[in-house]
Length: 488
Length: 117
Image 1 (cartoon, rainbow over the protein chains, first blue to last red):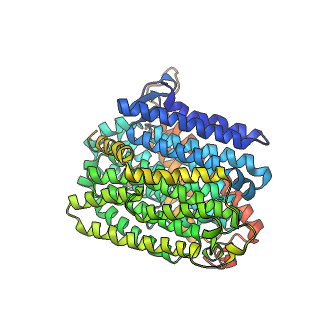
Image 2: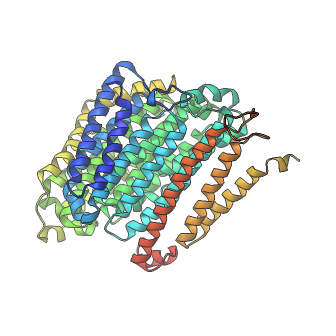
């Protein structure tokens, strides 16, 4: 039990080379890795709910000599999201991976997937800022590789662009780490938090903060640094799209929260530097511009990708409100949106497998031939809009409350208006799927996807409804996590 | 001359700007990767300069060594160099694949070949 924090990272890391050397049955290895990780993170979260924070010294070396792993409730929550999505994606992905990826590359694909999982977990558990950079690059490098495996040749360019932007972003974070080390002589987050207040008004620390914020914003795909995201989501293999959309931006957002609130401290970030003056307008622009672009897309994956950019705007909006409630809303939305987009992209992956395309014009009438998959898209879409009794409503509700508490009524108005735009792009999808006659109905591949693909999809969709009605789990954890971030 | 005292940081800034400019301004994908490398190298130089101490030696246990450079930043940058090498090799591998598919490594041409977008 005491080794859980490190096991979380080590399990997928150790299993990855097995995928590399084994020629077949690598899917089972990936399944074992992701399910064991899920068990780990559930046990960790139970432990965290009891004690609040778990510390672990790698190799028994206490800081400042060794690397400290430190997980709090926020970390445990993100771990649960990542490992849950990973376990469901792997269960679901057996057929789509075989149909979309060359036979001799399947084992390498699963190897990359496990490494990506390792990196995501590592970012969350570590208490060392340089370690964050290393794990971020492990995740990113494996992600670039997986995106490039997409069938369409445009996947290659999407991957290359993401590589260039992602590397610039990660290097910016590295510069920030260097500047912080220069001023404080430590890389441990807890030590940094103690030493920074005394020197926070120096240009060096401000420069470190600026480099960090821009670098991590690239990784989050915060508007206007989101250009890599739509193509990466659209042309990546279906399984990768699900995993990316549901977890990667969330993990980067976790890094932002960790640095803003634990390392630099909320007083410095929002009190002295007034980051909210920049973050709030950018978030609102992100929500509107990305939603409007989404309405005009012709490809279902692209619609959802632009909607992701908009939803990221909601999360940063919650952060920029800079009160405990806004933070709660951001954390809840981080989790809920992970589940929403996970469920939606699982359904879209099923379409991709059966119909072979995600262009809206090819999907006409598919609602009648694949009722279960389409049902999932409809409910997921409702959650995306924020219809009551779905998880999406809960997070937007808390966001509105947080905005009203700060007397920012215009933010509340913006959230409502943007929901209407979201309804427009979701409606466009539903119209094509149900109310138009077309190709999908006439095609020979009219059957529903197999049960083991429907089950993970519907599990996520059912969770959306459950978390929309019973908010104790998500909001309860998020409130405690937000409290510990604001007042450590 | 305080300007000259920090000459390695000036080198860092110049390299960084040159690298970022190459990444943004070039259409040739290979040149973009070179720019990325120059940019990353500037950060390596930055980290190494940071650990240096005037009139110091390497951190080894020997007679007469009292002042030594901070080894931690050098170790960190060793890791960052590994990351840089993997990024470069992955980028070059992607460029090879792009060249196989499109017959070009010019960004503008590739966008034209794909038509929409």
